Image 1 (spheres, rainbow, N blue to C red):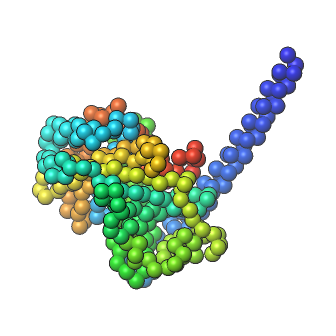
Image 2 (image 1 turned 30 degrees about the horizontal axis):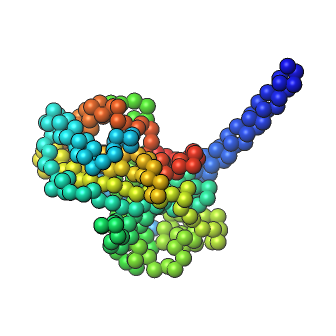
Image 3 (image 1 turned 90 degrees about the vertical axis):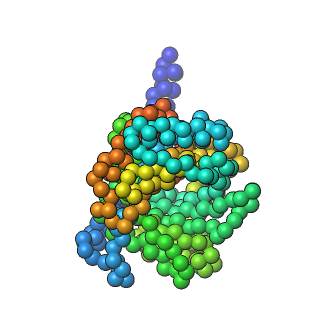
Length: 336
């Protein structure tokens, strides 16, 4: 009896020390992320331009997402059946729906990988770096796309980060307000601001594309988190994601406010382990003021009603990116 008691006490002490060590590491990561965010907020002043005198970027997209449990998506027919639910909710809320011609075709296949330091310094500081390649009939096509983004719940901080890549080639800036369900319940939404740039990999001519020295040269915003010129980034958790994507159609909220919508599934390449599904619709505008009050209200009503109609499908409190970062059981700090 005494021996068992002594053994249990020893195990409890070891567990307590392990938990304390993990807590200290988590606190250290959180402190570093907070320092980066403080530095960002101190550089922001409304009305300022970026360092090269370019005017501050403005939000020109609304993208509403529902993160879904993946177990029901076992065939392309399951995607189409999901589309019928979306159409039904649209009709019930007075939203127009026009089916996409590609909804009857084979899904699009894309390969996605995320790059980060071994300690997830980019993600812990609200940065995301990924590469995406489209496949047709089993073969990669086109120029692999690089996406670099800063995603944060505070619009000012998201605006403050200059994501323009220092490359000689072409690139595109997208600044989105991303709507997600509340983390703990159905029937509301929260907003993340995603400030990103996109360009073809061929536009980046530096030979060593995995070194932090190169990345800081291309994305100066990363200078705040770089430790040395010799460090490199690698695949996050060694994971390669296969995205299966099917366009569903266009949602019409009236007065020219339309949003294309699609359904997708992320799974690991090789093992085909399903990670997460996602329904999303996206509205583009030149200015926030261009979207009328009635259209805003209708979009919100549709989004919340769809959550309720799909409550058993929803995976609350996660994002697609977070699922990749948690592949090996890690819980990095994030602002998602």
